Image: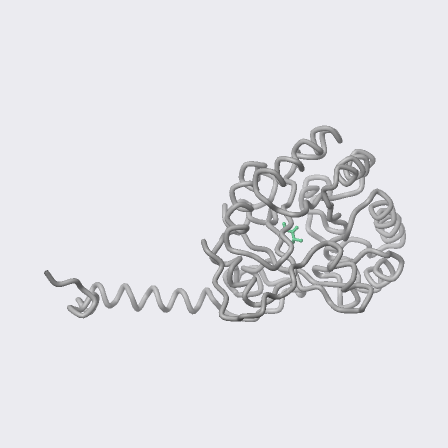
Length: 278
Ligand code: KIV
């Protein structure tokens, strides 16, 4: 899809360096997920800084209960589509479950595939286990920017057994803070903080040089991310406290589709004006 802009001014392309500059200047970084060209193009035109092709596509696009079934091929397919629709945002591709946990070598190979086969500019990995830290070191040394992800890490759902808030007790909070520092040391250019108390997110954001991107982590993070389908009300049954509903697209779409159905059934669509003549 060709990029269409109604402005003559090409806005400045977002890079990882630009994200760092934004943190340093106290400018908030605005991020959303996207999984296809059409939505990605709208986000670009609306000046979103970072688009994450998240493995949340397992829930949003594929209808799974967890993100675990998502494959590297799925992420490649959707990231290619997102790249077709965008120009200005930084595009980050999520590394799906088991694409980076097996070994730093496999993580490195898969991160390389994501960049080479999609054109994305960074990858995201969940957690901070020793293998993940080595993988991040290996990947970043090769010039591939890595976004970390701490707090609620949905790929570990079977270990935790629930999507509860992480870091509410002191031990867990200290561990998340330590992990954040380790991710920065390993070379991550930013870290997603998911569903942790805002006080902990503030401490982490102030302790790190690199930007933090919050989702359910309060207002003190350097940027914010939401799943686009959640904040637009497409996924209306999922309404945790941290999702602000900016639209109710499910209602809009459903009413439009019902109207279309009525028109077809009542022979009101198409009219002759909406038809071709010989
Ligand atoms: O997969 C995803 O969409 C994510 C965001 C929620 C941060 O990891």
